[in-house]
Image: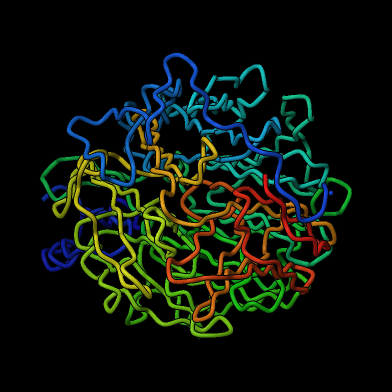
Length: 596
């Protein structure tokens, strides 16, 4: 950090240089001058009923004025019973970088009733330079897009610190999904008691992590069948390290960017197999530094173990290739995923992983800061990538947008992976783009080329976009969107269900491997293509999406098979289910699914 007296002695030349735009989330500090039966149908999820007050159309009524019914999504927030807002602390007018990050949502079936529920991070208040946490929000899914708030009843407040991210996983393999919450001040682990409540577990690791944690990833990194945790940390901000920063406009205070602070080291916590965790960071091959906002765990190179990709804000991104024992080799530069198309680091925030060109390899997609390329990294083989944003038709997106939450999802049910992005600035007074921004629908037109759909309905509105998750909230095969906007009510967008397409929703359960099957890869194989669906830990931005997979059969395909490669490095195959919609696939079974 540059001491204040020195800043006051800056020369005219340095002031001019400081006015040049810094890529990433940087703002100028220039002073004013700027275990279940084998492969079988899943228990049939509760279907939408015809209860009074529930619209039985292809989609519920939209909240958005003038919404086009041909759009893939319609906003339905007002009819869901969900009323939750992330509190950033902005109203304290401290201009702290803490208030810029926002929060996300975790999707999981916490009560095992066949419907996925939602838990939102709460943030906090910053008045009088005291961080006062706001409670998280847990909403139980009743069906028909109806939810009821059960935060206190379920013990889900998680209000020990200022919260950012919500990451569900069955860490102890008891069949009930637990949750870890990240934020400024550490991590809070909530164990699912199996009775509709969550219990905070403390201490749960040999070393208590009190650093600024962000987009964590669950994964079985040492292949012992127990879930471990990769924890990115952000920067060294505190009230003692809170310099004044200014916008280009004279005398206007602004949030300082990450370039003004030291990056914090990430942490690897391995399960001790008894419900606790051991810090193995020093022997895991992690590199120092980084300013991690997001991470995703998946088998990048398809060798049967779980790797990690980390989005760093204004420093090189990390690609950790696993040796199968929880020891990593950092390979982002060699692998071509450290930065932009010329290797310059970017302000990376959100991450999605999916197979956008149906070649059987998981690709990576990263949202970045304004005036930077959003990055589509095409997986060529064995974790070697090519930056393909320009040939994919995505070069213009970074011009105006500051991207955060993002997901791969087949929203038009044509058997390829489209993209959804939540945008919103972190600077209140940017010269280049507005603070409130539109979200993006990016349609995959085939083999990994994209076009932006028109800005209509919700996507014509501007928001302070941050967290984003995708989930089939009403079990109709359409993946709905949950947008977590900073200092705004969350927004729920209902998806159109697949109409003419042949589709199936597949849920994995590990037996030899971790029960959540994180790190496994599903592949939909037809005569002329192979599409990969990685089971992710983490991803998007401070959010976790529905753990199930939507598989859509290409229209030209007359038959197909589904393959699963598990973390135990074995592959199982069954024909694409034509008589069932929801399939529960348990590791170690070879029985074809039956009609549900």
